[in-house]
Image 1: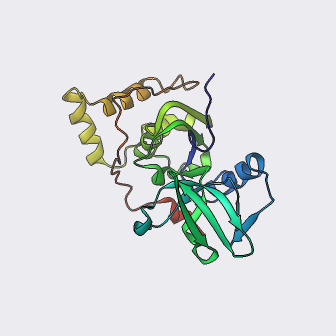
Image 2: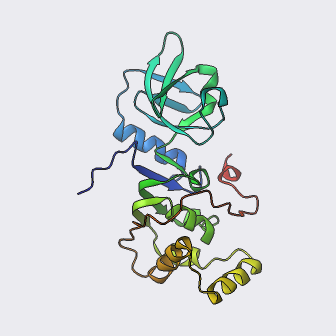
Image 3: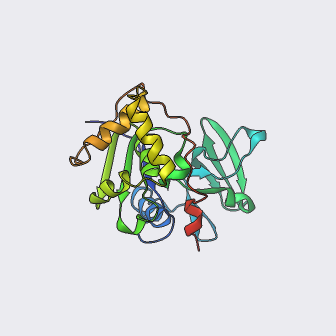
Length: 230
């Protein structure tokens, strides 16, 4: 059995923020079930932060070495002074209440935001309400974030549609050209393996140290999860 930490190892990836299965609702659900400690909290807008919450930095704080996309853990809250403290990789960063727009819960995060990161275990929900964003490149980005184990749950048949959804003819021609040249990169090999086995989705493991986890630079036609915010 694997000993996975919710904060350090497990990441839920979802393509949209709104809706019953979107990032915001899933974060609230995970927080209420796995971090029920309400002894000290701080509210900002519709968000509630608790000690031990997993959070995501949304803006660069270069002077403190914290960048957009970094994940941390809330280690202390001073309700009287209206500040909370977040541990990023061993560095403690202080946030005033007015700065809490820089933070959001990070139990679940967008596939778009996950680019350039890797996690021991990735949970990837697949629901029809996501279908407008479930395209081959986005699914591929999510899958290749998993360093050891990938769990896909929901309407798994959507995976077949997504992995055959080529965004434009240029992408299609590129795919044909790469196939003819007998692609040798580990990244493409990983994708080919996934495509070849999508009819057996019960357990897909990626455990290849050669797979790169750098930013993929996908062309999403200007579409991001923020387009679905109210």
